[in-house]
Length: 118
Image (cartoon, rainbow, N blue to C red):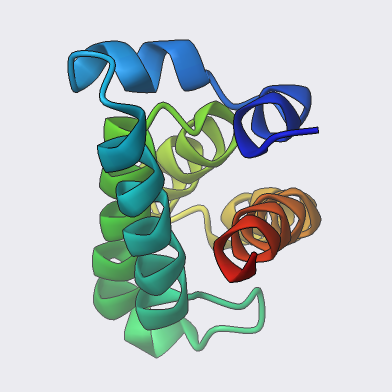
């Protein structure tokens, strides 16, 4: 199975992402690599310190934006909720959503990385 089909199977709106960049598959693939780098740079773990809330909001907002631009729908939707909850001060619900999305995020990252290697 190719990268785009696997991503579709994981809930990514590949067609929507491609539409944003005029169907340029090579560019989309390159941007997926940038998404992996963004996740590594801005990663947030559920045990984050509440005192660092502003930093966590900034990190989750960066992931939300990057995933939204590429139509990585499951990540975008979860991080949108996380940002909103953190801004509203509901840290526990934000943590719960983060815990739920991290396995999905890992599957998407692994899928992209496995196709980048070969």
